[in-house]
Image (cartoon, rainbow, N blue to C red; front, side, top):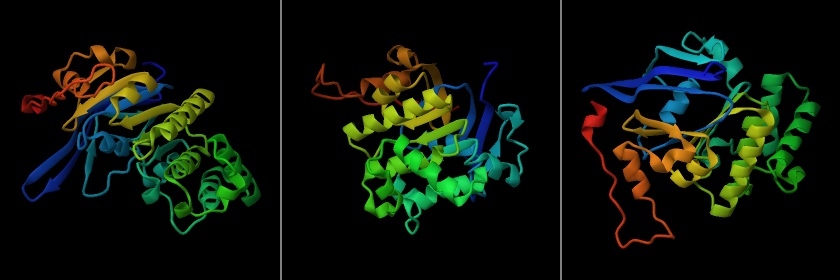
Amino acid sequence: MSDALLTVENLSVSYPTRSGVTRALWDASFSLGRERLGIVGESGSGKSTLGRAVLGLIPKPGIVTADRLDFGSQSLLSASESDWQKLRGRRMSMIMQDPKYSLNPVMRIGDQIAETCLLHLGSTRKDAERRALAMLNAVKIRDPDIVFRQYPHQLSGGMGQRAMIAMMLVAEPDLLIADEPTSALDVTVQNEVLRILDDLVQDRGMGLIFISHNLGVVSSFCDRVLIMYGGKILEQCSARDLQHAKHPYTRSLLAAVPSLDAPRDTLATVVRDPAWLA
């Protein structure tokens, strides 16, 4: 797409080992506008690796290669560490899977959110705290003044996830990668978090990469979907056409989803073919 926010061509991630090179991501290619792009697949399919590679978060000795990795008009392949520090948090952010392991346990919630404003926006302490409170309110946290002064262990899973979303969005980034943001939440809280993300994406015009195992959530929430297996993108389709996907792996994933409307005695088995990785 001509107005793409993110353009990825043949992005690969590999790790050298004693027995040779292990590839965790194979020649991933896609583009992202100001839309909601879902990425689905089984555990180990490369979803999180893809998200981290886009943000330059693959640790050594991991090797990242690509023919093209552009954020707007800027090539990320030639970005220095200084360039990444200016981009991450300010223009690109990532919601990690579990707030228990991503939030700093010895810092108050408000201080963690305000820190983003101090580092990336050059805000004064007073303005940073004001922005942090406003963001806590924007993600529908009840009593934001109280949560502002609390530590992560004092929050429930849903509240912690909302605080994480607030911290990632307070600098108003152009690109947000949400890695399993609802996996640890019950259905009611999950729907509330999705509604918050949807409102913020619509209001702020961001591009969203939504990583999930949940085909139902992705098909109803996202605009387009990438299906991954073994580190490869096997299929791309619009979310509304996901039920009519063509690839046998996607079809088997859909068949394995239990349905209350059509109960079955035996669930389908997911089909896997090593030839797909050839």
